[in-house]
Length: 162
Image (cartoon, rainbow, N blue to C red; front, side):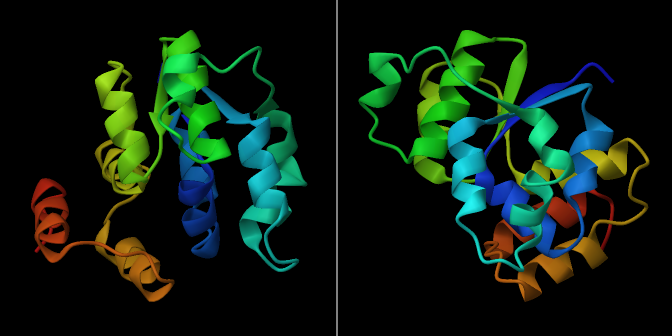
């Protein structure tokens, strides 16, 4: 396991709602939460699992950035997405973990490797951390995670689940 991830708030928030943040730490050798992402999480409700995580064990993953490159700033993304992509841009060994479409487009245009929440879940199954993806994805959907039906079929096919 030599994966290094820099993680945005949305995967942490949705995985937190289904007690799945530990998937992130189990699947990578190093994880970074930029300060801007930590600040976004800290603005969550008092009962939000991601907020509680970032103010507990998650604080050890928080790191600051030296600067935001102008070419990333020009994308006018949210603070968290901007910092995630900036970290990955400055540290090419890191993959960005983010779900936002515009942020993924930015990462792609800069040649930054990325995956989303569903990619993390598929990797967890491939690595034997999860035996099935369907129960977790069902809980994600129940918590408001939106997944296109075609993408959902693709995920289940890739996981070899019907």
